[in-house]
Image 1: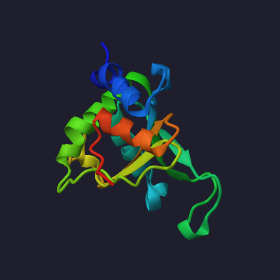
Image 2 (image 1 turned 180 degrees about the vertical axis):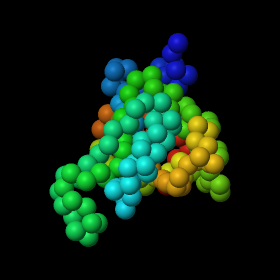
Image 3 (image 1 turned 60 degrees about the vertical axis):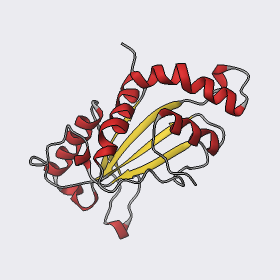
Image 4 (image 1 turned 90 degrees about the vertical axis):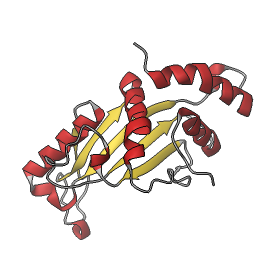
Length: 181
């Protein structure tokens, strides 16, 4: 069965983007390529239990097994050595990506206290949009009584949009509550 947002993209978003930006071909319309979830472990990089719990939490949230990321070089200011654990991450593509995006928009973001929309200035200029989630407990899969530590993580939406405005309109049409500039 096709994901609800994938169907919405094909039926509504493509036509709206063609009208708004004057694309000649539906294949020119930007789309979301992947969503990356990244949770840093910080000073807990030596604690195997906390790293494992971070992995389990990201896996529960995304529905996919997470990967441990390691430091590429030593940075004394962060007390990090080359090869030390930095965090855990997951890259979502295809159906899982659309399912996660749907869950984020309909379930998780409405659970954020005093939510006024996502920041409009978090675009990178090359079609990517990154936001920070302060608490992993906004997702229904995470049980507040079981978690070791309240942790945040980053979400990066990677699109193939050529301009920031195209990426902004695409994500807004997909349902992300991005504030107006």
